Image 1 (tube, rainbow, N blue to C red):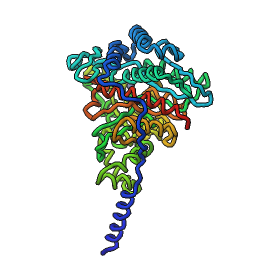
Image 2 (image 1 turned 60 degrees about the horizontal axis):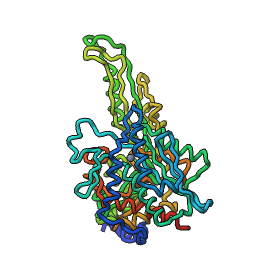
Image 3 (image 1 turned 120 degrees about the vertical axis):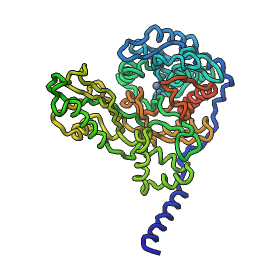
Image 4 (image 1 turned 60 degrees about the vertical axis):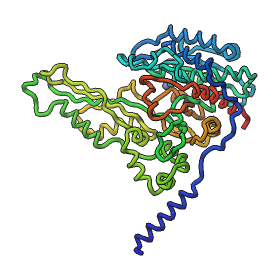
Length: 486
Ligand SMILES: [Zn+2]
C-alpha cells in the first residue's frame, strides 16, 4: 500500500469513527402538561378567521389603517375577557399593544412574547387566484384561509388564546410576562415594536427572553433528514441599500461619448458580481449543522459530523443554491436602475440601487467599504442610503436556559422533530429588543413544507386548523415551562 493509501485509510477510519460516535444534541422529550384542544377547534379557528377580516394592511409610504386596527382591538377585548380584566394593557404609538401579566416573584426576570398585527397587502390582480377571498377568514377543508393566517395574526391570536386559557385554569405567573403586538412590522417598523422596546428600556425592564416570529418547523426542506426540523432563529440578517452612481455630461444620444454612465455602471456591477462578500460557514449557520448532523443519514452524516475536514466542500456546495447561499454570505441584489428619462437623451446620471442582506460578522459600513473597494473607480459615487441601515442582530446565546426551555417545549409538541438553531434571512421586529433582553429567539410554532413557503406574503395563505390548535398549546406550554423555577 502506498503512503497516500495508508493516509486515506486512516482518514476514512477517523471520519467513520467520529461520525458513529457523535452525540445527539436533541432535548429529551417530556410529555406536554397542557392538554390538546379538542379538534375541530371551531371556536378558536373561528376567532382567527374573524381577526383576518380586519384589514390591518401595511402599505409603504401610507399611514396605517387606523380604523381597522381599532376594530381589531375591540374584537380582542370582547374575545379575551380574562386577559383584559387581569393584564395591564397599554397602547404604544396609538396602534401597538403592550400587555403586562404581573408575576409574583419580583426577582424573576420577565419574558416577552412578540407578534405583529399588520399584514402585507394582496398584490393587485392576484385576488382571483385565491381559492377563498383573502380577507374572508373562511374555514374550509380543515384550514383557516386568508392574509395573516401564517404571518402573523396566527401568532397574535394564539398567544391571546393561550393566556386566556391559562387564566381560566387559575394560573398566576411567578415571573412577569409581557405580550407585545407591533403594528408596522411589514412596513417601516419604527413606530411599533421599536417604541415598545424603548418604553421597556426607559422603565429599566430587562427581559430574559423575547420570542418573536421567524423560523418554523420545516418539513422535507433539509437534505439528509427525513424528520421535521424546527429551527430557532438566533439572529436576523441586517440590510443596507447601496446607491452606485455614475455621472456624465448628458446631451443628444446621436453624438455619444465612447463610454456612457450606464456603461460605467455596468462595469461596476460586473465587478461586484465577480467579487461578492465572502462565504463563510459561521454561527448561527454552523450551529445549525452541529445540531442537525447527528440526526442525518448517510452520506451527509459523515460529511457534516466531520466539518473539521469537509467545511470547504460543504461551503462550496451550500454556495450553489440561492436559499443556502443566503445563510453563508452577505448577499447582494441590484434591484433598481435609473438612467435617462428618454431614449434619445444621454443620462447625466445613472444609478443602481443594490440591496444587501448582511450576515452576522459583516456590518453596514464594511459592506459599503467593500463596494467602494471592488468598484475601484473614483468617478463613481458609492453611498449607503441612510434610512436603509439595519445592522445584523447579535447572535443569541445557544447555551442560555431559555433556548433549552424553548427546545424542550417544541420537542414535547412536535413528534419526532429535530430542533436546531438557525439564521433568519429576513428581518422582523425582534431585532429592536436586543438591548433589553438576554436572548431574542425567532420561532413560529407551525409546520411548513417547501410548497407552503410561497403562501407567506403570497397567494392562498392558510393555516391548518389542527396546526393552529397546536400553536395555542405551544404558547400555553411554553409559558408554563418558563414559570417553573430553575
Ligand atoms: Zn411577519
